[in-house]
Amino acid sequence: VVSDSTVRWWQHLYKTTGTIDLKTPTGRPRIIRTKHLIRKLKQRFTDKGRRSARQLSKSLGASRGTMGRIIREDLHLHAYHITTQPNLQDYHKQRRISFAYWVRKSLRKKDHRKILFTDDKYFGLNGIFNRQNDRVYTPSRQEADEHGGIRQISKFTKRIMVWLGACKNGLTTPIIFAPGETLTHSNYVEVVLPHGLAEDRRLLGDDFIYQQDNATPHTHKNSLAWIKNKFTRFIDENKWPPNSPDLNIWIIMCGTLSATICTGRKSKIIIL
Image 1 (tube, rainbow, N blue to C red):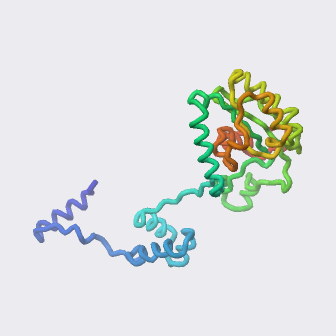
Image 2: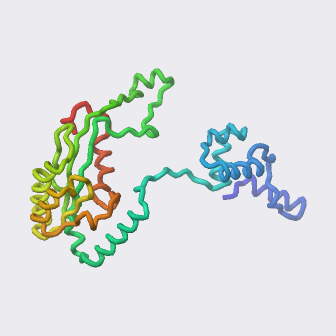
Image 3: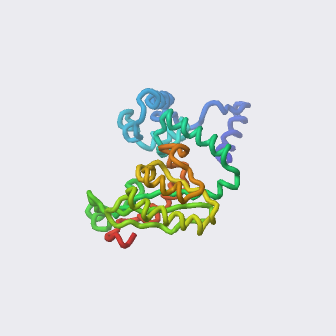
């Protein structure tokens, strides 16, 4: 949208000169946000790697607002959060490819809906704390501390382990271990696997596929013997690719579940 003042200026130019010059911008020339500064800032991004806008403004002698406008409007750059992903080596990638071939060759489309994905996860009393987003607006630091600006975190926080399974028909009943208790091959065989078998039958009937990762309690000889004796179909350690939590739907759900359960610091285990 062109403003009225611009239209009047064009009319004045046409009446006085017979042409309208749109190449030369009107107004006072730039003295800070110049082409030289834009090129210099672009070179800094290219040669010196990661730098914050505050560091750039100090080193180039310009305000943070000017740096922000150059980054957004002149260089057309946008800030993106760094994402995390599994550290996959060539061996892991090859195992993933082999697993994909096995799934396409051995499982039918309807079999994909018969898989029960299982895993265990720790939940701690400290909860989830986002330092970037959790802020308190007050006139001073002292008042911020008095109005929720301090978060106390235990160095050795208590945590509990939870086992859970997920499939297309819903979630299994979770197994909540005692505080400080970890998963071993003994309680995996005595507690987890019988519970997983019962939940498999409740959610999927007798025709199901049991999935587990390659953790030591899962691949222990006693655990594998129990699984081979009780489960008709399961994904063993030779097929499931290692270091692949992103392939497990239950692990994908853990982020949302942790944010729901662990928001704020808990004072007692029973709250979880």
